[in-house]
View 1 (cartoon, one colour):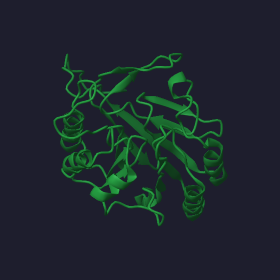
View 2 (spheres, rainbow, N blue to C red):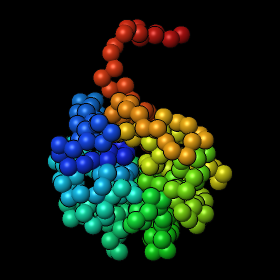
View 3 (tube, one colour):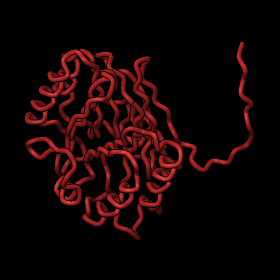
View 4 (tube, one colour):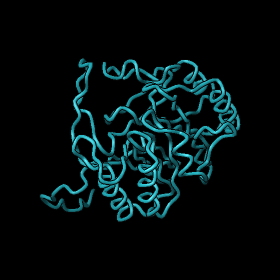
Length: 268
């Protein structure tokens, strides 16, 4: 299964910008690249902060851009999003019975279950998976029985060692990760929020990948309380879930000049 993972698009109404950048144009670059190079992908997932301020016009722009994609799309809401405004523009997007923007998708060929978790908490920069959402998550993990599970969410359920994020991650990480650990076959967590490309393994052995962010990124400083925003190229990840394993490829050289051609090595 091939999944395109995009995160932190931060769209604003057409004609506006963030830090001198046009988020819509940058997302268009990513969508163009996906269509040109990965039209065979099974799914696109955008892990939150779809917009910067939750305006109706920003969701309208997002809808117009993503509608060009030839494959299904799953969206998650982040702390910059408005769940109500999102659902007003995407009324047919999967939600749970309580109106949270979370759902499941079972991968083909027994590859496992994808679980998309809503961590948005209105008025907070940090996230939360409330008791209602924890109950939902437990049910969806139980349904997966002993099959592999892959989790997509916005806020990281851990402290990644960067001071800027120490108070704005998931606010109840222990309850959340305890459910994943109890299931025993959660293979990977895919994240947004941090605007830093980071990979690692949690104490319970579950690996994770956080995307760089499509619009603006962070020039990493572990000790600074305030972050420094940078303008790297628009980017995304390609996730391959296969019987032989899981592979995450970072696509962050869109438009970079070609400087040489490496000949195909014949091998032994």
